[in-house]
Length: 393
Ligand code: SF4
Image 1 (cartoon, rainbow, N blue to C red):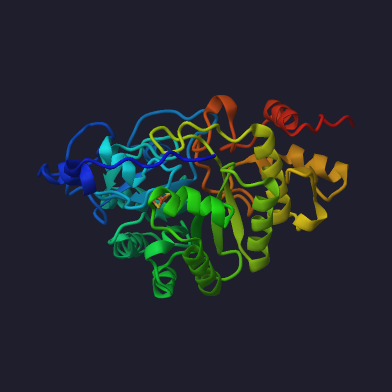
Image 2: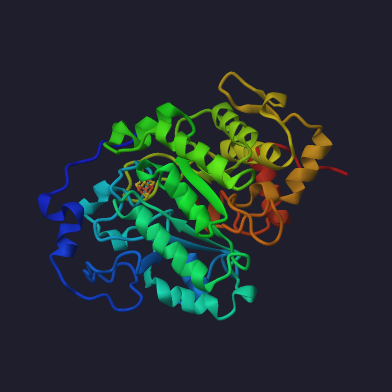
């Protein structure tokens, strides 16, 4: 799983220079690929939001396979010069400035329209109690203004929307953060703090988002901020994102899941998907059998108190047994929750994520993370992928 090496960006496109060379004032909602070069369309006045959130909010029309809406309002800070990091699997990475303006880049397989923050708040504030959103999340990117603008977006929200009605998560960018910044997000009303570790081992981290691709991130700094989040937010209120299938073994990723649980936190899994335009778009998506085993084992560790050392692994680090009786395992498989998208909880129950990210890690024709409750047909497919036959009662 070796990323391509980033090419040099032509000088006239570096740092959003071609966008900044224009002075078109932004007007309301910007739909990606409209090619309006609006250098002032930036946070904190503007944020980008996922296509699913834009459809749920009524800003965009469209339908999502199997889902009426998303339960998480995912926001992304936005700037004409974009994210200054260069993570190999990411559609927002810096190297893309060579051929795509920031506001037009795909990220976790979908477009992210840019919308004035006050328009979003106006819509949600009409009736937060009956909003379809169970949670709001601010995703920071690597940018010198990232912290200040996260505070501004967060306080704009909590000034008008009670965080008890719609809790807020922060998806942080540790590289530019301090412990005080973490504390400030909590003081301004954030409920959960997550760190996008993404890579499961230091080697994979360096190769995909560190010096291997001219990106500024360091494994040690990510862990420092994760520890700060643990101290400041407390048990069950912090966690880490992990992408499965970037070259780590199943044992390695599940060992990390266990480490996070032992610290009092949670893991949120993503199945590797070759994002178009990224430095890993030539590589295969995670095989479904590998993904399902990790999904199931992670669910057992995170929510069923099974430990990684109760499980067994083969010579290649693949899960051989899950450490609980077959009948119990069968019941958990049939409940289907283990195969839903993992993330911060919503209002249904602790192990059902508000952040359902419809089709963020797979196409609807071959679902990796289910953004809805898997039905009988889905479970038959999942069991086939797991190579665990359908239970005969
Ligand atoms: S820091 Fe985040 S947004 Fe920026 S390139 Fe890396 S993964 Fe993408």
